[in-house]
Each structure stands twice: as structure tokens, then as C-alpha cells.
Image (cartoon, rainbow, N blue to C red; front, side, top):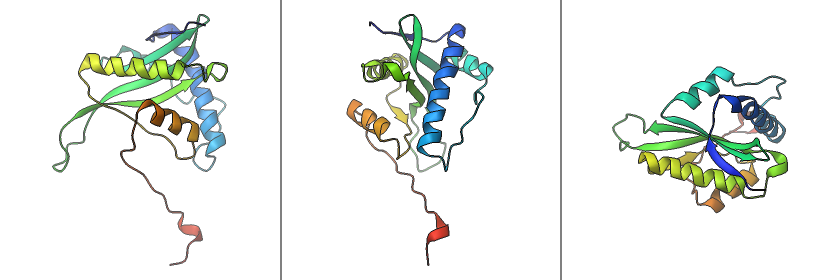
Length: 163
């Protein structure tokens, strides 16, 4: 097994959709109070194609055994225009997934390294991602890679508390 990483093309969209289904199903199983299972693709092919075509977005795909076995989706973002924030550019890694049979083989790390190189080539100094608290495996992967917590979003279910 010698995986390679490259930018996605139109022919990769069906495999990307299949991987998104795994990611979406994982979230629906892990956090059913937030995510619901679907029997259709939540992302339109044309939206994925647009991301492939745009200069400020990228799907990096891992190829193994002549098929797409993982991807990361990146988008260049700008810090919100608000006086207290310093203007800055960063990359948002919105989605990342490796096909179940190919996990724990270094492919996720290869994809993250390729994401770093993609950002460096554009002069983008940081990558941000969001991870659900219950997604312990993903959180540990990102921390091990070198990501650090930046902001914590908290939720209060007010149905069961007394004030």
C-alpha cells in the first residue's frame, strides 16, 4: 500500500460523496441529538465541483488501490471584519475523512501534511478545524498532529435545570 495525495478532480466526486456519507453517518451515530441519518447525499455534486474549481478552496484526496480512500476539504477564510479582531487569513479544514478499511495506516496524517503544504504554498499561516466533543478519536488525532484548542463552544440544555 503506497497512498498518494493529489488535488481532486471531477471524476473523484462519487468517491468524495461516498466518504461524506461515512462521515455523516458517523456523526449521526455519535451525536443523534444534533445529526440525523440520511439516505441521500447532503452535498450537491455541483457544490463539490465548485470547491474543486475555486482557487481559494481545495479537496485533497488520498489515492490507494486506484481509488479515493480519504480527503480533506480546505477553504481560505478571513478573520471577521470587526474592530476587536486583528485582520488575518487562515485555512478552514471543514471536512476530513478516511475510508474505514484504510484508517490507522497514516493516511489521515498524510492528508494533513498535504493540507499544511497547500497552505504554505499560498502563504496562509494557520489551519483551523472544528471537532465535536464526543468525537474523541478525531480530537486526539488533531491534537497529536499539532492542533491546539483555540475556542470552546459550550451548550446548556435548559430543560433539566433549576434556577
